[in-house]
Length: 400
Ligand SMILES: Cc1cc2nc3c(=O)[nH]c(=O)nc-3n(C[C@H](O)[C@H](O)[C@H](O)COP(=O)(O)OP(=O)(O)OC[C@H]3O[C@@H](n4cnc5c(N)ncnc54)[C@H](O)[C@@H]3O)c2cc1C
Image 1 (cartoon, helix red, strand yellow):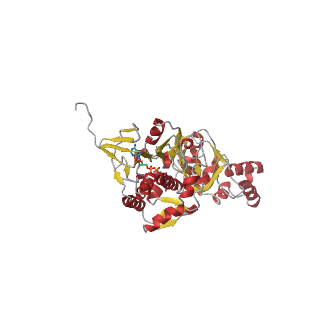
Image 2 (cartoon, protein in one colour):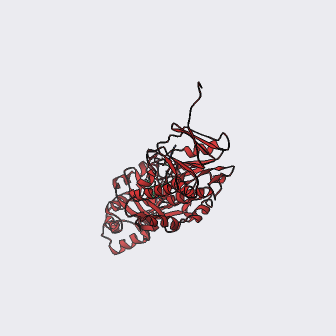
Image 3 (cartoon, rainbow, N blue to C red):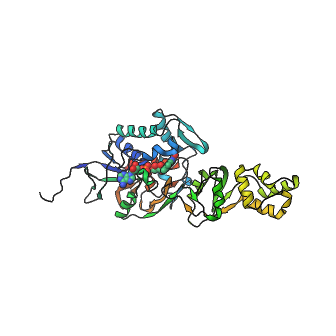
């Protein structure tokens, strides 16, 4: 027939778009429950972000408990249901059943001994057990719901199913295939999206704090603070600003124009330390005193910045107390962040008030689910984001 588009249409019980952490967990769960599942991804491989995660070893969960207080969300209670029903121990059981060796690093973080590839292979294997049909290099050209089914169009054919799961993640690291497709679909079907912004991201510094540039490559333990939130971990000076776990963590709580405070001498009362040093060793160089407590390059740069030149005796007590206060609370205003290009995750996403916390389905359209990073639930650094991906994927997979 002239003008008629000849397309092959295949039908499934559910179609999952996004073969990342949450999409694969959702697919294997539903597939093993006997559902006919189609898993689509536009990349040429599954689990692209899993492969680069945790420096190639995938920090796949955190045994300090995936409590809801480790997550940022407009509704902090939303994640509790899914996280409560699929725990770190549940994921570890799957990892163990596949004979994947792992170890605990700091702060309860679990990593593969070998490679993140093992996690992807495990998920692919579990999907195969569930008879999941995976199609890679699938370019989505249309999503609609003309009747009781969702219709997904791709150049390779159309697919229909009464349930659709959006597992396309957030826009962080676009070069790894990240897109905002889940947000577009949410809006298309009347759901709200909480403004997405980069999180777990290095921060940049303005001209005022340029002295940090000379410290590029130096790391030290700090307490980073934004408002009432603090993280005690390493900070790393970079060419453009600051990075390292303490900074990545606090970046999630920082908003443009806000101040961050760094305690550069955690556990030490720097004012008392400096005034005491003046009494005990008046002829000592101030720099020398600082070098005893800080990496040398940091000590030298800070001594210059806070005017601690020459011998200790040359400084009034009040000046030392003031200098000490700055060392325990170095306030600075980042000029910005390195943006989505460098952000490990995205804060914001599909608003949870339109979703059912048990099934991750849209309240007004129960066949449409959103899982993983696409949803407005963002974890701390340390395996919490994967745990949310597993738990939310599982919750939706059990509801399909
Ligand atoms: C460098 C880096 C390291 C990280 N390390 C860790 C870590 O060690 N521990 C941790 O817990 N978290 C880590 N994270 C965060 C973690 O990777 C994410 O939170 C997690 O992958 C989110 O899972 P997801 O399934 O929701 O999304 P993703 O894993 O991002 O999967 C989304 C999938 O959807 C596909 N997709 C996107 N758009 C489309 C489209 N338009 N059409 C078709 N397919 C599409 C993508 O190709 C991708 O396969 C890291 C992130 C980065 C960037």
